[in-house]
Length: 530
Image (cartoon, rainbow, N blue to C red):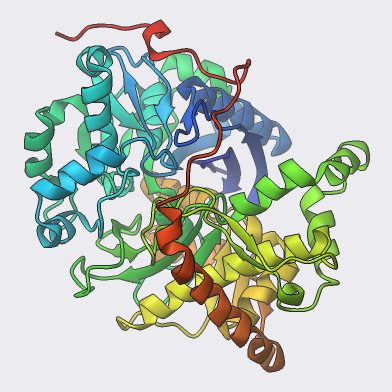
């Protein structure tokens, strides 16, 4: 029996799943990593952590699934978008990756916006507004603030592309993960030359363009040894995690809508053309399903808002998890289950790293509003869960306004493990929420793409029929939905009222010196390509 591996590198963890060619999940392994925040507006990662996490999770998945080296036929890799790193001609990282959450390139985003027509940008790239997140803005920041590094780097790679290079030795640029780079023309499926002209760099400093689902090559002997596999394993470009996740829940064609509550909250709606949104407000990506696109509005801190609360205020639950194995998340959501809808008047804005769709306010910050002497930790957890559901509803309303409505929401990501969270989303949005067997949809989608590329499945429809299996359906409670209406209106009004104040807010104190800080860029190895 041929086995398939799916690899997805997210914002705070990397996951590897092992599947057989009938679509059955054999094992999933997860490696978590922490972002480095040397300054308030910055988020970085040592690129080597992505590779070490892939090796560690890959070996554990193979061991748990009792797979022999020769059993695996193919693997596919997907990743978060927008995180970019400089590497040498041999693939050595020359500095930390600038993570997609990083907001250092505010001035660069503003300058690029001033030189480009917004309608032309959206028509070509699917990017609705110029914010520091996009890799083109980060490249301009490097060019201005670290010219030595900018000159020395042979290639600038996104996470998926970095891992593919480590696996195969090839430098590729994959269309799905490049969709939000401001460098790729999603309509023409080619590099968008106007941006390269502004940045004064050559497309050769990225990689060879490939489409999602492409077999890039086979494992090098070094990668095969690291993973405990053979060099016969084919390596497939899986796309951005949102596209791979949509594949993993069967969201392959228009009329289907899914949401992922991982580190971020993202909504995916399949569309057949890149120019459907005349308003120009919704991000459009290249889907991992061939010939298809995705509407993909995003809130940067979805599940990460709950992770933040756990790490800062959930020490008793974390300690119990270590001692007894009871998930800290389950303990926290169990506390929140006893709090009535609306959290007794407590409202949260979950914008711990700026707001994207539909507000597009990079200066936005997280807010708890309305707490009193009567509120406890359980209220704050409940308000966090509800805030993410309110953000989901705002984006569903945005999609419905341009005709991308649906009769149910297919939910995936770590948040889909919580029955309470799923029910809150159903009640807030007044739509059924459906979960699938195995919450790691992007990993499953990658395995499906690997199966098509290796011939285990004839196409993604057959892969979907085999691997995508409903698990639970959460119907909205009409009375609870009615109770949420006033809270939802206050949530929207609160953001609107604070919007001007966000821009006046002084940044928090810089992170203290310590072992968690990355080395300065000047201390990283360099290979000058000039």
